[in-house]
Image (cartoon, rainbow, N blue to C red; front, side, top):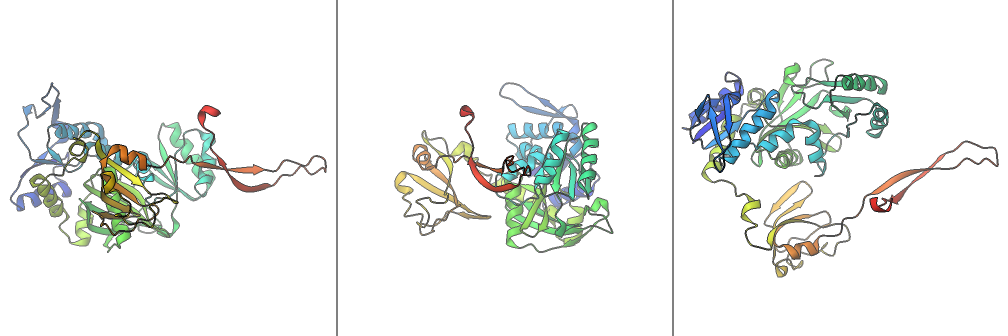
Length: 416
């Protein structure tokens, strides 16, 4: 295999280890400075030039795109994709994970644990937003900060408000997150390669520092993750479109809380603490993909007119609850269940006697018209409003007390 490692830091530990691991396995590995590329666009012939010369043929590339060159770096990766070169991480995955807000927005739809988070711009919204996520203390983060830079702990609402207003005055966008007290000064980094966690470590802050980043003086120790943490890390990486990722999680009372998904995780701390060959695992995965590439489901499974892939959700009250896959009569409707998603578990090729439960999600291939008829109508979200009792002017009592919350159906926009 001829592997290109996209990196502007030829001498850094991670780049050297990846090159050494590839060469040790008999592959040819070249470190390519991402900023030295030129992207040529022509009808039917996307091409790349490196140091003003046409780039030779590569089997795969491993992007190590720094935060400061995200735009140009992802453009280079996207060009390799157009040239049908395997990329360990997709350009969209890198872009999505680099923006902390975008990352959490994407993950929030998939029932993955994360600290309550808010994002505001108007100063009038700051205090109500902090109240909604549970009040102080809160953690304030720059959207594109790395290595713990731009992460501040505010112990009071007033301090948080002052910090946010100051950052806004300099045109900085920030996230505000509820501080997970039980995980103070500690977090977990899981290194995901493909569909596995190949190594994991716990990072512990020093002294009064709450940030556990190694660059902030924290130290790392190996940790054995249970299934819930492993499955959460793998799902987060896959949802972001990353095949190689460092997933940072807090140890909350309710289980893992995702903080960040890193598309260019450093290898030195995790290899040193675990004594595992993480670089080798990454290279082996890439080589396997080059030898036997993944099928692009979107292109391969929609070639027959009227057939395609869809995800079927089984809500509370569904007629399918308590039935087996066979009893659901999916096959009679020309539908095949490929994968069953239940909570954080993924069950490939569910057997005919598998009993379906509320909340299950079935990834199916089959007749689109049949699957459309099985998708329940979208239920509008209900807003919970606080009803305020009107003052009793007749009795002279002008004080009002809040009553209980009630469910009020959301009014359709066209009826407002």
